[in-house]
Length: 373
Image (cartoon, rainbow, N blue to C red; front, side):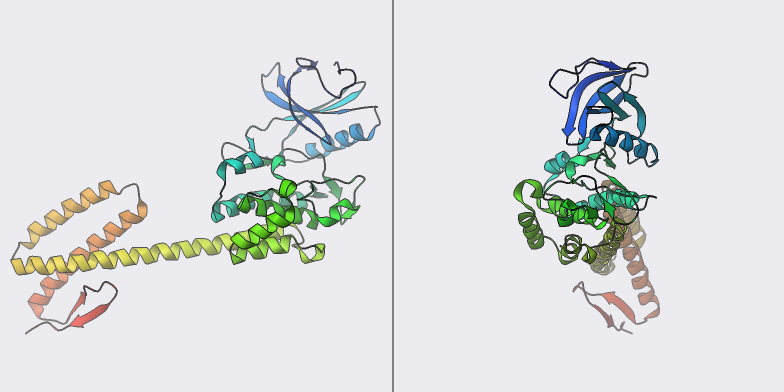
């Protein structure tokens, strides 16, 4: 393979075995990534290069990254295809993950609704929790929007393991790594733990809610905007994630994930309660209308069978119109049941002169009225 003199870059259309280089797709402190095509299988792959002498730090780090990536089986991480070595390079050949970066996705979707941001954050934190719970544990160290891919089906995938630390307990980093604005204060010291990733997750969540990128505009501006805009439960989570002292944060991403799930379940119950309240309110409204309509029909001497037949036909029409909206469907179904029930009740009241229960014209009250003897 040819390397352009004086540059750490690769000529286009150069092949590494069966992989033909097409174009550069990313470049960072941990290496250069190219898009390549498998000439035999006609599949796209990502090829990450490190240049230098055989035992230089960059090439040794890339070999370690490849070995660690090969040990993972979770589909949210790209799988390792091959590792190629040359005189002046090491190439890590990985699955090419199609989609847009989380940063690109967020720019298109801003402003995100609170529930949408919560659901997206759950996916991200659960992925980092998988790394934290691996044996040995993995501390990612560089959580930021551009290191996540949102695929067509809406899933979240991680695309770069070059900065990750593998080991037990608090780990000593050989080199400082992280993105200012997202990185925890202690991350630029040697010994860090999983709490450093929790801090970055909190900053990422604040970015999702505000659209203020802490890497460009500063973390203080991002956090202040988030504290002003988010509700109390979300503010509490982000504040705990971004405490200056690591021991005051969630100890790992799993704790954060569990707290997000609690909030989502609580909000789901509240939505269900609100929907049921809306349903009951509409049933009372339609029941009141049905009661008044039944009383008017009875006074006018209209044949009950003919009215019921008309009501059934009307309900069939409504069912067809509102078939796309489940809640409205149930409202009309319940209203029809109330209508039939009230008609039967009025008929029985006339027949047996019993005490009757009527839904008043005031849709929120119930009262009793004695039938006349």
